[in-house]
Length: 196
Image (tube, rainbow, N blue to C red; front, side):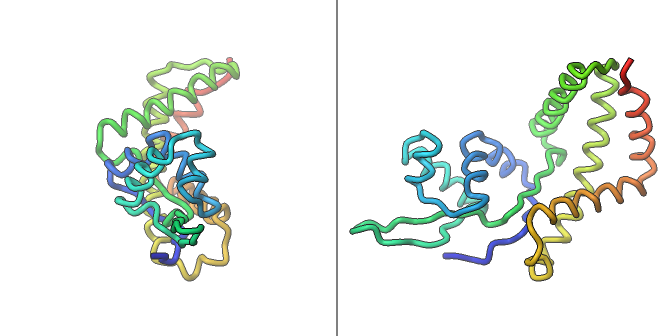
């Protein structure tokens, strides 16, 4: 039943990533980040039927993202408490699949709207291409570093998830700083994205 919860799990399978990104499943994973919950608790919070929540939990269990952490007897019923298999899931939207690449790019487009609202002017396609290439590099470094962490659970157990996430971000930035192409892309980003 209950295995030790990992600190970090890297998700590289495009099908698992798509499964995770479905709205209800994403909400379930978010709710289970800090505590174990039953189907009925999740159902109440999400405003979904227990059958619907159970269906989504089963999908998440099948791919190893959620597991039964403990059971309790409530009268004649056995109540299962579900939890995540890792504190942090790192996903890389740039791993080949066209649908996921499209999703990654559409998420970047939202940032362009924010830049415009803040008074920045730029060539949209040029900026999107540069951001897309930088993000792809950053994701590849983050994935590489996160995979290194997966085997170091014991040495990371005393650190908070937030500290681990920030450490991965810093290590990823250090990798970007050693990447000549990434440095050129960052320079180009600075040239394109300016207030007029």
